[in-house]
Image (tube, rainbow, N blue to C red; front, top):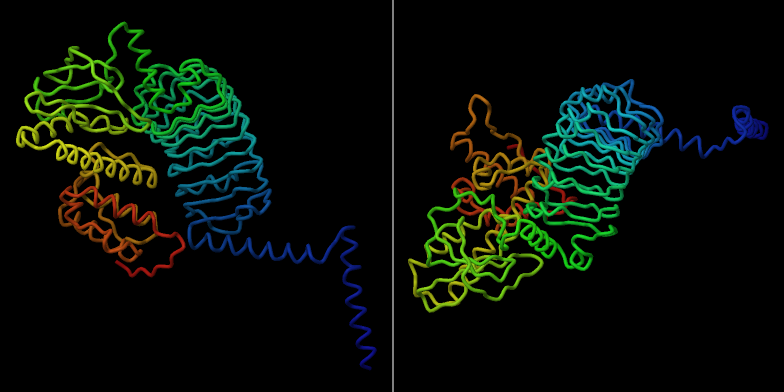
Amino acid sequence: MKMASSQGGVGAVTALPNHHLSNGPHWNPGINQHQLHTARSLDRALEDAVCSGTLNLSGRKLRDYPGLCYDLTDTTQADMSKNRLTEIPPEVCLFAPLESLNLYHNCIKCIPETIINLQMLTYLNISRNLLSTLPKYLFSLPLKVLVVSNNKLVSIPEEIGKAKELMELDISCNEIQVLPPQVGRLQALRELNIRRNCLHMLPEELADLPLTRLDFSCNKITEIPPVYRRLRQLQHIILDNNPMQSPPAQICLKGKVHIFKYLNIQTCRLNKKPDSLDLPSLGKRFLPQPLTDRYTLISYHTTTYTTDKTIDHMHHEWCVPLNYNDNWYNIYLKINDTGLTYYEVLMMSMSHAICFPYVVAAFCRSSRQEPSDPSFTMRRKMEHLREEMEQVGLLRQNLESRLKVLLPDDVGAALMDGVVLCHLANHIRPRSVASIHVPSPAVPKLSMAKCRRNVENFLDACKKLGVPQDKLCLPHHILEERGLVKVGMTVQALLDLPASKPTQLSAV
């Protein structure tokens, strides 16, 4: 009996593969197990998306949208990259709260008009697909980041100028021959990547944008327009693998400062006037009082020594030596009635040039109050001021790059209500600050009590996330705008925290 039963069991097992062989010539039990596991994993991902609002279907070789049986209309982030989709699923275009959509590495050939339903969408990555055109209606969305690299685009529609909130645009690795001048209307654009296209020239309209990074390498560009000297916030310019003639290759190899020096000199030659520091945007609102003829200003890129009674009227007198490096402009100040020679006022980076009149005036006031200060004391003061401005610039860069926002010129005033800092804490670790008081159209300015509550909640979140005590600023550094350097240290320490560090947060 036992043997017969055993043989019957063997027979049943033997019959199982034969039964499946009839359905396909290459059946393999291992593949079937994998498919079952994949199906269970897919169901689990869809169930998680229903609860969390984050849909992750990356790398599943999907040809169709699998979530028809699930209510995912509350989804805020969707990652469907590395699949085999031939179109953007119509169901996804009905996710009204969707803020981020990643469709990298699929087989999508066009963008449907129904995408205009996504009026909360700020991030769209549709790179490495088969797009040949970008539709006009795409730029009706409130996009802040648009990545369409590695497609088959041959042009960019003029309607791109409507994307007023766009901060990052990556159209690299396409076949674009001309950029429309409407790109110059993207007043929030900070990063532009047009690498590896078929461009022969750069539009002059880019000169008025607040770009910090510009990459036009691997094109056919021969000239950088002289008006690009106005890109004072530019930190990185990448132009290799172009047949550059102006500036010459030997100038381009020396770095950004040499390139801009060349552009400024070329402009001065074209205008047939002596070289002068191109600072037309230096508003007098930063200058508490006019400079007198006791103070002498020297241009960073010439050997011409100039004296002025105001910042706008300069007259040549005599020549002095000039030094500069690839990071900073050297600007000198002379106080005629002291026994001192030339002082290094401040090595201003292009991104902070707008603060120059304020710095000169502040230095002049301190010089009048302490005319007998020794040389080393003055240099120490200037070095301290330079370091402070570097820290404030780094603070601005950290906040803008992480939160994809543009801060006003007065960083301290923008942070004093604590709203931006609370959002940064929640960006680092969601729900770090459970409640944030924000202004409304009816009440555009928060009360001091609510500002203090936001600031205290931010600092409490920093403590719980693991920011060291010695890196924490105090509430008055934020509320009274009296310690931006210390605020910058706190923000930097928050950003430097390990991403995988487990942290228990109590409800605020």
